[in-house]
Image (cartoon, rainbow, N blue to C red; front, side, top):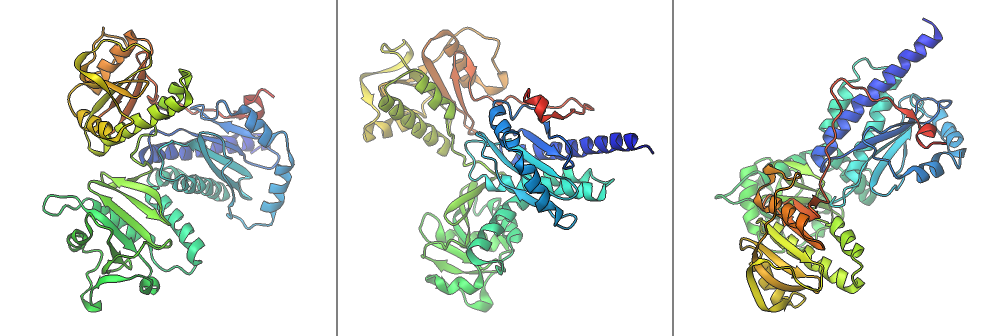
Length: 483
């Protein structure tokens, strides 16, 4: 086989390996978070030019920063080569997040694959970016392994990444606990995460679990003050999910915590949760895994997710500032709307808010208030939180005054309607298409929030899929940046 033929085959193998890992990342991260794009910058060997694999244009608008990182200072390549040269085969030297706005990145290098940096979307409502970083780190490690062995069964790497959420969370928790306790921490994390998921799906007398279950290393149990401690030989095992669910009744709607060492239930405590403990907060049909007082992920519908389950409304905040309102007024209106949206989400009902950004209110049919209510006052805001449950929209002026409730939105049919989204959503599309300076915020009962302006949903997600059988061809980063 000639050298040229060998290099062509090696390049095809590289492209297939990248596509396999890429597809696995897109599927896995999109299930853990909302729909997620992925990109890769890489050089297979030290002498190779940097290439970019970005079918979904995740790195668009970052050209100047990429030029600074990779071309304005070329010393990184030599220092990386020195670092990898002394490492054994298969060892993966990590490179941290590049801090590109709107993205999460992680990568590294090895002797078998000189450099790779993986990127994905940084969604604004993520509990933590670190499980996603661990996901990208594992993608880099798998890529290095595939090339160190020229693995003919490399297709398994994509399948591993599709289902990596539990392991990504576990990796991050282990890293945090090692930071607090050192590498001698003995408590196994994966069985704990399995218990949390099983418990989250277990009802007691028709009700989902509520309260906090804390997992703590046995050598630190004496640090807690126990209100009630179960006799050692009588302690129920944590894999007895029905029994643990019954014990959760003792900590519902309270500051008490149910304490476990990972194997059994120890008792009930009123102490603060230690930083090195793994805490599961159950809130009905959803909850959060926390460590050191910070949420790592949420859990609902039988799986783990990255979302905080609270809409960030970034597009609304940007749009309000575009109207050139007084900064104080703009901030007050945004915070007010955010609180109303979160109220509707927490109570699991739909809602519609019409934001009237003009001096004169538009005419809406509904219950008109005389005088309007200043929603900056607590008693009026609490009233609005109840009025929002009534069919129809709340009509709010930019001055934070509520001038109507139960308002009906109408308008002529437009091409962008989505029959699958229901009447509340499509009425908002029609209404904003016919009225200037009006923003409509729609909260669906199943939690999605839509920001609608000029007949367009500003925070809609454009789903992108590769055509079956189509292999995207990477290009050199220098060509991509037009250098």
